Image (cartoon, rainbow, N blue to C red; front, side, top):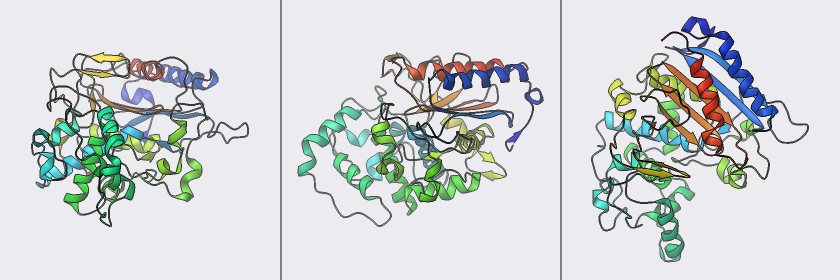
Length: 385
């Protein structure tokens, strides 16, 4: 099924209620909740809304935002990385139950032989971001960085080598702790096993087959005018629009994209791994990526505690979390990105929702409010199940 514009009634939705979604999204800009916003919702392959509100930059004479604006996907990149890993699993060249050390021997230390590929995918490696930062701060001057391969980015190469010997915090599989470096390790595995760089792999096997022509690592200079800008006081503004961020090839957060391109990626999952005649994943891999692989494992994130963390391979699984909205089915899966981007897929209701914003510090839990409101309004527009 290929995405195409259509009327909400064609797919059992209400035009009047979709109009309310658009009004709600526009009000977020009018009320200064965000300065820039793009929303896409597609049900059964029909795009029922694709709207942009606000301005490209915070300057008073800024161009009006359009649907082709580029937003940093940040951590949503991790779902692309997980997809690449599953492709290599399908090819029979890596195994999810194999130790990370099988592919990266430098990743060593007491107990780390028990960290498997699936632990990295589900953030259950037993290593925390704060411990990695402390380890690098304390040891960076004594760690020798070997020469890098030609197909590896210098910054990623250095960061990986600085963290290879970080010690465990807990036994693998005991608790979920969101760990970006774990996805950098997955990107390195993709590079070593495939023989091409991680961004080249994504470009060749995801962007190109799916027709995602507006998605980039290391955004070309000719396309940078499309990148949405933040005010200096906005969350993440100090790093998200720097040259290092725009040039990033990080497997944990380097992609810049449009809302429609991300919707194509989401629709591929709704289509059980195929889009526009191009198969990216097998249906079985889609099932495996989008089910809970850590039953009984708890997690804490920001100001929330999740007795059941619910995580698949790359995707967060809704379960009982109500993550991103109150009306999603337990089978829905989603992912946030820093500073206000979100993608959700609900196979029960056959719908994909993309909500891009510039997050602002309103002394409120942005990610647990306004995107929830948008998603609830979209789901409430469904009248036929």
